[in-house]
Image (tube, rainbow, N blue to C red; front, side):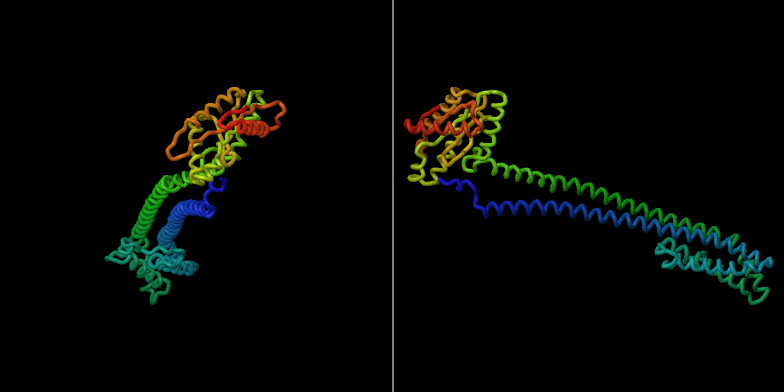
Length: 390
């Protein structure tokens, strides 16, 4: 029987590997995509907080400067009224800056302000008899009248109105405007912080859920697939026993350990008698069933620590560290009797021949031990089969 029957068709194995790889890659990409999306959202929220803070700081600074400009205009107007003509140009510049600042506060788009007035601020600036924006613009018109009066009486009246606004009317109104902008900035920051906390919570929950529903299954799939690959690499698929390569690696290590510790070491090789007849008359399917049944009997008969491997079509081997040839022969005989006692209504009767060998001082590797066991196996066959030879 050919060993090629033990492995799945190459195209089936390749398709399985490809499907597993695709599934693992898709799960990993999905997990990374979710984390990336939440990270991007967090970035935009933080960026928005920074932008709002900067804009709010600018608005509050400009609003507070309106109060300072009002006081500066009042002082410069007093100097000009006292006859200091050098105060005229600074007075006009201060009034122009105050008008520009007012336009920026109520309309945005200038002086680095993009903040649009909110409902409460808009009402304060535009609605009611004490609306701030008309009061400021009236004040600036009065300043313009004072700087360029139509008559001495008009200039004097403008000066008195100007001083009344500077000392009584505008300062508390401008202070309240600053308070409105500060309150709005604080509310905006609190709201964004709440959103950020929600996003952070969602991110943490997402990470936990990904751990349970994506990465945990992913790790399990990797582990299962790794175990599957290990089983493919080390096990004989038909019988479930160790394949030749894995058995020889294990046997060599056991032999080296026994030689280093100066301990006895034995091995035996088993061959199912007349197995070719089973294949010729029953077909390969029956032959496969016989091999599987023998593996089950051997697994039930031998110790769980013993490693038996399939090293050929119907040929098996076992190494027995720390065991002399007599003990190995007893183990081999126990296995032979268990196989010979097996009765099945669907399978032909089985018997096995066993060759036993013990390590010798001149051995260079475990293959020398197994080679002598193979010689003993052929002696058992020549002697009539269904027996153990050492």
